[in-house]
Length: 231
Image (cartoon, rainbow, N blue to C red; front, side, top):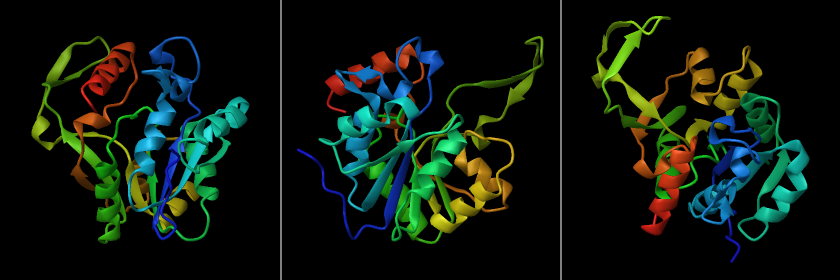
């Protein structure tokens, strides 16, 4: 059954999905790789569409795959599909430009985080709605972190208490994200980084273990196992 988005919602979600995903091995663009028989992108969009305040979803697809991606998503949710750019930042900027008048909260979400629960989408949106200009979901860093030099010689141990692993969706007031992309110089892979460069405060909310990023074959196997457990 096709999900119905909320016509009274105040959230637009941008999904840059034009990347190749070389670390996942040869094959289709990463967002189109299968996970338990369906592309990562389908899993991601299905979960986004289940978030109650989402008004609009815009997917930036590989330019050669726009029509096939549009057809793929028709049974999932009413999604706008546009050609993505050569870099992630270009894809996000193009998707942002395609958001209609209305939503003033914009979330940017990686298709590779295909199991992200709808509750996390709502948590990030609620933090922006509550007055923050930029919000990122995070998890504490649990591994010991070493700083090394170019020869892999250890220079010291980093205090992990002040470190966080960042996930998506990242949430922004629409005007803040638009201004950050207009002012962007060198391409960045993190939209919160663009906003930080403009001097805007970015705040954290608790992330989710299910929002893992599927980057390597091991991650894909883990995600498939999580699906068998009902994720």
